Image 1 (spheres, rainbow, N blue to C red):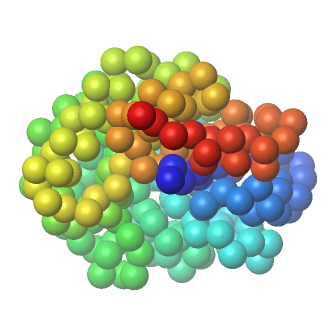
Image 2 (image 1 turned 180 degrees about the horizontal axis):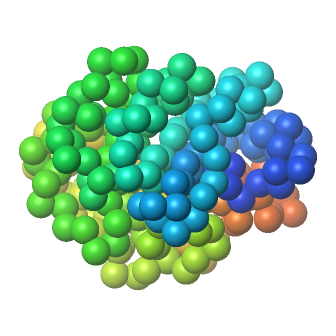
Length: 218
């Protein structure tokens, strides 16, 4: 069954407590935090302290996506403030295997994200220390973009590599996932999907989650 990780970036920050509680009541599987630094991506969001503020209102796992130039500087603070999974970008890590290993050694799961134009040729060299690979299906930085259709093939490629390498890495898909695109994403091999505006903008998020989790791909 597909897992759903709503991105807090799509929530109403003026009523964050209610939005977080709504996420849990909707039976989502985790909460996704997009930390951006306006260097790696052209947007600035929030830092690790938001995790601490939100943790008191939910027991859901926290998935932190570091869209920053130097992710190693954020790892300790993210774990300290409640991160269960930390995802770094392949494009920003000089020593990717070392960074992923360090995340695991400090008690969190390790993920690696790739932009739409980044090939997956690196993955076999870090698969042994990667719990999740995050396939970006939009160019990172902003919520509400349309899914880039050519990235569906990349999800399929990632799935094939995981099978061939015999690892347990899960596939997360982030960008433009909604009721129109969800079936193609699941069919391609996604284990988890990130939803921002599609989730928090839904008039009935619990019904949306139930509908998506009920999708059967033949």
